[in-house]
View: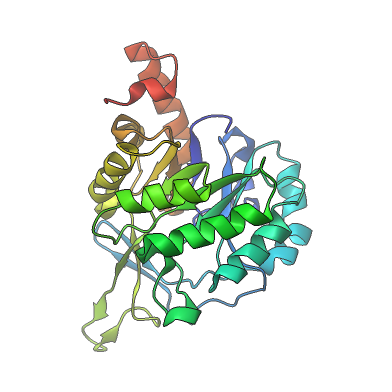
Length: 290
């Protein structure tokens, strides 16, 4: 990464959407929306709902598929001279591996972020991210399909009793870094219509409401991790990002704030730099407090 700030997958489209608003090459990296091998239409609407302190989304990982991304979006990103992290997903271990095989060799892809919060259709729909063995199986399958030089980032699920076994499982299977964490499963009900606010019933909660929980997850993970951690969850200010760095992250991702103020990542970059100057830190890793 060019600096310690990227954007969270699903909040920045494929980069083009924000390129009209600021110079996206100033980002440390661009993390694009989730991609699987085949195109996906996502969930029916409504699939976004605002709540106090954040938002619920159940987009359903809508996307153009691996080949569609490479053909229609990657050329634009290659021209921006910024590392590109592609979030990948699947509904089976084989699905992850196939997607990784197609994207891992594409010119301009710097890293694959493995979203293990998806349902495993071969095992009753339980999330891969809820079982350390499943996490390890997915990461290992992806590792086998890409070059040893390709950076893998395992994006872990937050709704687990203890994140540390998942950190170890992902590391043992070959991940190079960790992204912590994904959205928290949640729902809202429209009391006038007397039905769930989202067509999918359940969505992922993001925004300021989850920030303290995300900081705790990063603290727990960084305490045992041997690989770098990218912290995310409710970053709206440089101070929010610096909390993650204190907790042990070496990079951060801005998510929901992009929908409110698209320049938030730039403000976070500048704020971290100012903080380091003020406190005499030469490396972002020096900010951690243990």
